[in-house]
Amino acid sequence: MNVLITGASAGFGKALAERLVANGHQVIGCARRLDKLNALAETLGEAFLPVVMDVSDTDTIPQIIADLPEKFRQIDVLVNNAGLALGTEPAQNAKLEDWMRMTDTNIKGLMALTHAVLPAMVARDSGYIINVGSIAGSWPYFGGNVYGATKAFVKQFSLNLRADLLGTQVRVTNLEPGNVGGTEFSNVRYHGDDAKAAQVYNGFKNMTGDDIGDILIWLIESPAHINVNRLEVMPVAQTYNGLTIAKDDS
Image (cartoon, rainbow, N blue to C red; front, side, top):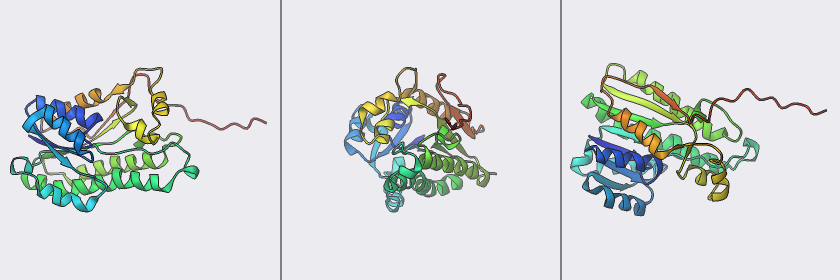
């Protein structure tokens, strides 16, 4: 099958691309950084098609999809993996440009790509959309403000897609990971401050991009009559906090 992955140059996307090609599938790997895509293509061979795509530039997406080579044109699985968090400040101190960039990527880009791919899936009565959400879409935490809100959108959008697709064989899953190390997520969130990013993963065993890649390949290769609506995963070291209270010290 043909699988289109956004954010394919690193992290979850790269791990999934490697697994898919190893299992005999073809991958359309989309990301902003052509050098990283080309490096992956050298490893994975002709089954991996590198495609430069900035999902936040939504006007370009329909033409990119239309221009895919013939053998990659039918998209059997869409993995909306591209996304980012920026900043950890409380809302009153956050930068508006960070909020807008998260919205453009995590919401608008995901919508635009889904809109470009979904009609052909419905026409074939076959296909699978996997949206990579986050536990932040369900569980608020300090500094999660707009990032969490974008992932709450992804969760609800995924569920509403399932409602609209009733009667078709098109599947939709929202995958909601917790803490995952070994990716660029925290480096981006802290605007390139590697020391701060490293602190996020100190002192416990976090999940890795390979762990999420394993989950994604399991979803993609699961029987076509089964739909996993939502899948929330965390490392064992992470769980729900109690409701916190700011106490008056006086």
